[in-house]
Image (tube, rainbow, N blue to C red; front, side, top):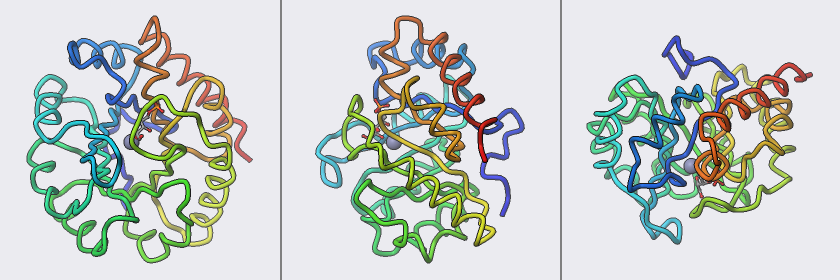
Length: 236
Ligand code: DX5
Ligand code: ZN
């Protein structure tokens, strides 16, 4: 399996600010600040108000971000029903990687193939209440597994502690199956848990409110990177 993030500027562990928490009245300026702090991957939370009880944004925002930030790796997280119907639109908008939820896609294999055939990287996401065993048939066909550490729909929620153990089990499973996916955690990530998360095996820390609610956005991204690197060095 190819490295899910072919961009040589991206190495693991990494911090992927989630624009869901950004001030949309100055989105470009906010993303610029996150990039100044070292962010190379941007997490884009797409919500349809059906799969999750919130509506966020669609391909147009991805397109606008791509225009302003050609160098950023856009990690697009689809929290939507019928993701299959929208893959082309998010591909055309300039996504680099598209993640769909295992809970919502009856034809997940077809969706993942469609993302891959478009030349993008593909990911699968699972909610806190979903067992890892649901990933049985897709683990070897994804570049990324996004483990939700909050119930999806809103930023700023409390981190669900059992996620740490779930990450450890997923790392074990990846070793046993020789799969090559990156492990991403999404929801409630902060300076308090970043080190523990990468020590447990997380490759990508998605951080929304921790980044965009900070006084100094670049500083906060740098601090999260530092914690992530320390945790990574503690991996057993
Ligand atoms: C689902 C979203 C959020 C967001 C991160 O609700 O995916 O998890 O990315 O938000 P914070 O970092 O504010 O919890
Ligand atoms: Zn997300």
